[in-house]
Image (cartoon, rainbow over all chains, first blue to last red; front, side, top):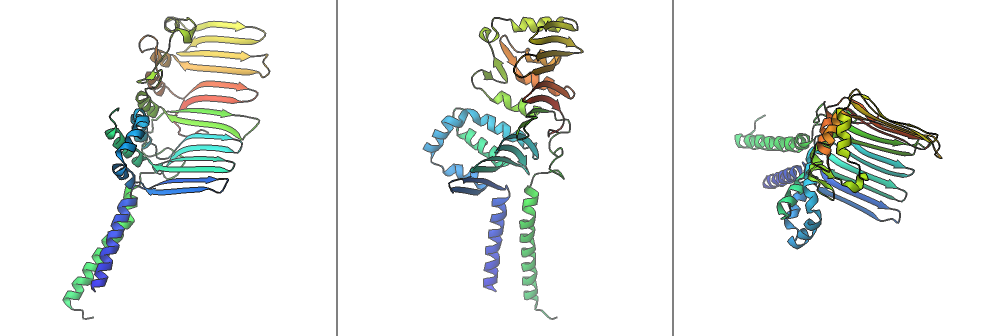
Length: 142
Length: 213
């Protein structure tokens, strides 16, 4: 009986942690190259803003030097994009090259396809807004 | 069925805990998911029904594999533009100087057009091209028809005068893009630019649909 209780407690904790971790969705980056290289990154969106707290400040400052002026734009853009959870923004087709930028189910989807290389990025807009706010708070220039 | 009271309580607690967990696991993603429309193609639930969209479409009639489609909500552009401060763009306004206009006083020109009555201001008809600039029913029209290029081309621009006014409402040597977008959003469905030549067709228009046809 004790084992059953322990198992239930463990499963409950895992379930609650899992539900919390994935409640904002998943950030996905999939990259496939013609030479066989594949990059597939799936990260729960909820932990990305948290991960910013553990990034070494030296590296963060370096990134903020470049990204700082664009953070208000990113924040405002993601905030506004959240109002359009299902929309097509850009579609460019040129022969076998295809670029598609849209929102679907509250995620910004960017798909780039060309012969021998495909890139698919899916970012929850809520996560992007959180990141922009976090970085803005850390950026002295903004 | 005789079950001792402590076992019964234990079982009830276990069932309750399991039900709660199942509810959390099943309902959490649903609760967190954004409101989405029944189908993916229509207007969305969050954006207002009155949202105005600026569309740009470039097509190549001879080749269906070359197309550009851009759809931008005017309200989004109005909010985002002021946050961009780069080069000549600042706070939703863009600076220009005499060099850009080859010495033409654009503001005076616009004032003259604005205060004048409806009519044709420029009409040029030559063997190479026809050019017509006119003001009519609150719109500024520019029509250019190139006859003798390797490819014939036709350019038609139709801009509401309210948008032109808003564009030049900023200080000297500045164009107020945000004011122009705002003015544009108050207009009805409008085809702003149409360019046709033998190779490509370009259309820029405003309507309330979030997809191109």
